[in-house]
Length: 204
Image 1 (tube, rainbow, N blue to C red):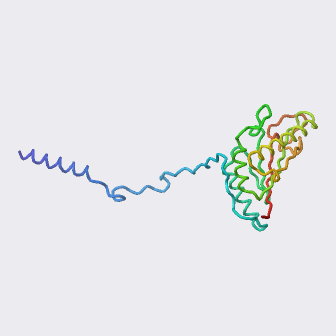
Image 2: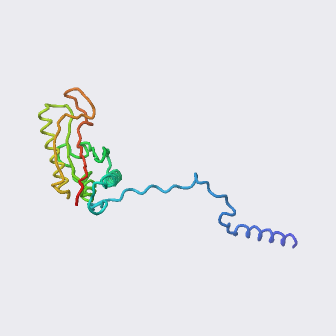
């Protein structure tokens, strides 16, 4: 009988210990900062054709630098597969032809144009210079004509997406201004590109 009582007391003690709720921070050592889970960075929100607003109001000359800083940050956040380069107060967006045109030479619907146009509609104090370039493969005069067609096709696509036509100009540069220097009659995909130079325009 004595043994049964002792066994019952021991069992009660074990159950009591198991049911005790640990005090926060009292029974367990704190997790070092290096081992704490890190929340992932939020992805850029989908645009779905919505306008991304830039700084409101008229643009004064003294505000151009900050205005273009904001535009550059927005472009880098929302555009994928392109190069965004800053040159003073101008921004150069370099897009490979494969992100712009189908193999048949048609403009790819959606793609980079939807977010780009949504951003530019929110920054109305800008003008765009659309330039098209190619490699040295083929006759130089044909390449010049081809890039002229491509530059105007991109400009037209931006206008259809809501960018004011008065803010957009286009020009083909043929096989000049190569990003990768090659000999004549060489195929080089990195030279086949669209470059959009964005400049601020102060005023109302």
